[in-house]
Length: 572
Image (tube, rainbow, N blue to C red):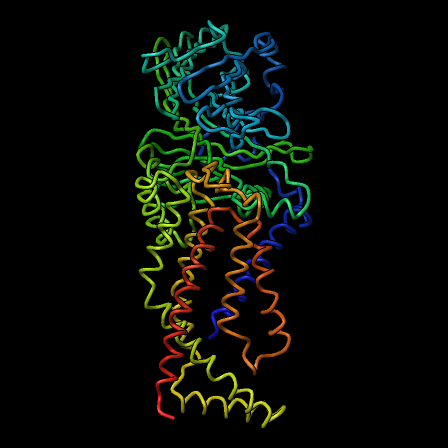
């Protein structure tokens, strides 16, 4: 099989897939809103120990505004700024919710001469169009009207906290107390060099009755705005990546994209031991992680589905708590807000590394990422590391690709004789096919000889695509004229180089004489097709295939040259 023909097939499939994704984002029908359940109903599983009275976000619940002690909840909240060496957060005293987070080590855009210090990535944000917050609270199982949930008003002694130089740990306390003497202290704990935030909700029961209830944690996020037009969608790597909720069952990693939140069959409503709940975006994520071995109940739902920006929720409700009068009890959890760095997350919680989802190609992508990282440790540049990875893979597959190129070269030699057979048999395709196969048999040429190497190397293609598409390390990594290897080549030099490589490949493998005219025309425009396709891909991926194509073209010329010499040396 001609190598060029094989590349054409995969190119058409890739372009068709990208166009389908873009069309689906812009024009696919939305799921019916009747399938959406409210937060209250979704939070009422069959397990009676899990409460169903957790209020929706956005406004104080009716049970609070209509009951006693409503003044604290109706009062205006304030905001606390917390700064560490890695994070700058804003916590709203309304519920003690984390409503904004800047990742100080990650600029939102690649630095330039005009903007050498761009603002950091704002992962959590409470604006309407990019709403993404982390909430938590306690809810009573006896239906009390005044509860320390995520809508209750907490108190903070300070408006700003900062992890001082030389300080390894920072604690931020917030307090809530009702008229009956029930007191809750919510403590956020930050550690130097860590994106993990500890959360303690301590219950001091100063009332005369036993308090019973549950602690819960939840993440709410709106679907991010879509780029205007399918062309920008293709060029935006975040639009191609997964966006939605994810969770770990203790054994298995599951995902739920935003578009499927309204489907009842896809909704999450189950209890898992040793799990966690997260919201994912490209390169970064937030996750609530309960204590190891704890069984939590997880649900997903959509709030305000009829609004312009419906909020998608994933919630984890902890086991039942019981605090007798005069006693205290605490609920613990951790909140991760940070980058998706491969090889570091499983140390935080089992399965957390799976948030970098390579799908079915994980077995190839993970070791390939490790090799790429080793080359970067040597070269100190990700572009150079990609080139070294090309050379390594070409070296390992040299013999396989040599078989493919040799088959193509021998097929090329038979092209004039196949043309003669076509003239002889005209439109009689059956006789033409029989004569062609006899010719291959006589000359000991296997027309399928080039297929096996391609089938073996295709998983490498897809594995590498995921590595270069989802690797945080390539984000804003410069190489020569390219400021960001995770984005498209701004000057389109790499797609043009690859088109020239394809032209060279066609020169070494001219269109077969017996090829269908339509297919022959498609093969002639393939260099342009690849240029257009690669113009949307990350520059790191284009760099890999441009260098891979150059090395492959050199190898193909070498093999073809030797086949020509062998044919010339045969006796007449």
